[in-house]
Length: 180
Image (cartoon, rainbow, N blue to C red; front, top):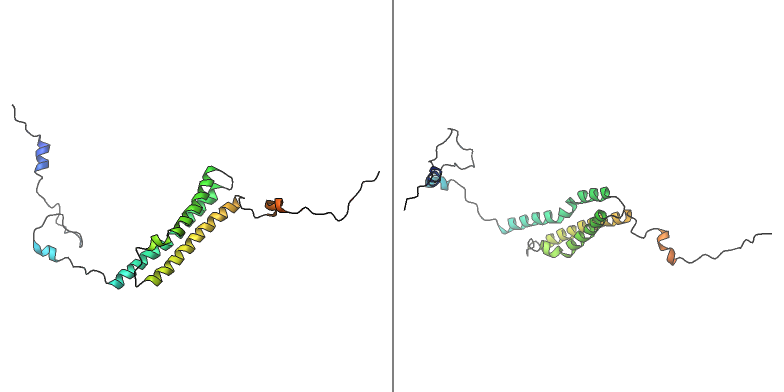
């Protein structure tokens, strides 16, 4: 049985060449050298971070909560442009836009507590409540954009002619009879 020898590329993969610096330029501060070092003094130079205090954590959580609260309003300009460009006729694209314009804000309002439960602590409940109110207002603004589009398409009954079935027929004050 002949012995199998490995090709040269496989041997090179098993035994990579040692590191040779390409230039004498040192690495910039904050970037570790790609050369492996076993010295213990390199590990000690990195400053040790203390865990954040509860006040700092509340501040960070509140900042993230504000980001979540303002997220619906950030997508509003693009939604408005897409609604404007889709036109006022009844087509599948404009109907899908309307469905999404109503579904997303309603689902956002219903899921308000779930969206903010990870940010709420005993010490910042009042501030998170304010953020929740802003979130609900932003969702209502997004919902108003959908109502604007439906009105523009003529699907909202806002004119007198939309309610003619419930109008009483007018009684004439006088009659005209044609003469012979």
